[in-house]
Length: 139
Image (cartoon, rainbow, N blue to C red; front, side, top):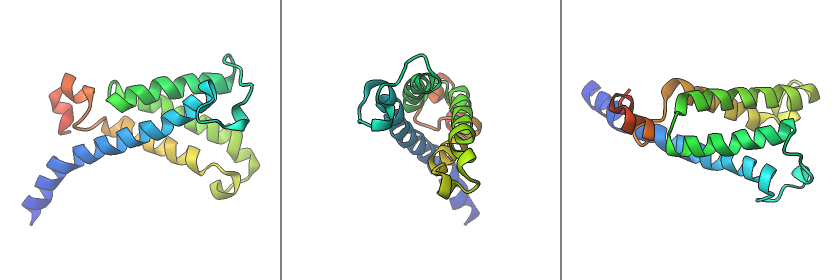
C-alpha cells in the first residue's frame, strides 16, 4: 500500500500543484486587469492612478499572474506576490477588525498563503521552470 501512495505522490502531486498554480494565476489575473484596464469592471477601481500603490499592485498582479500561469520564475514571483497580499491585508483589511471574515480580508490572506506555498513548492510538473530544470518537476 505504501508503494501505491508513493507512486501517487510522485506522479500526481506535481501535476495537481501545476493545476492549482494555473487556476490561482487565472483568478489573480482578474484583479490586475480590473485595476489597470477596467475589465472586469469594478467600480472601486474607477479613476485609478497608475503611479499609486494600487496601480503598482495592478502591475505586479498582471506581470506576476502571467509568469505564474506559465510557471516561469515561480518561486521568486510567488514570494513577491505573497508579500504583496500580506501588505494588502494589513493595510486595507486588518485595521477594520481582527477577523478576516468581518474585515473582508479572507481572499487577500488566502492568496498570501497560497503564494507562499508556491514559493516553497515551486511550479509543479507543467511549468517552464520544470522544462528549464527537469529535476524541479518531481521535487
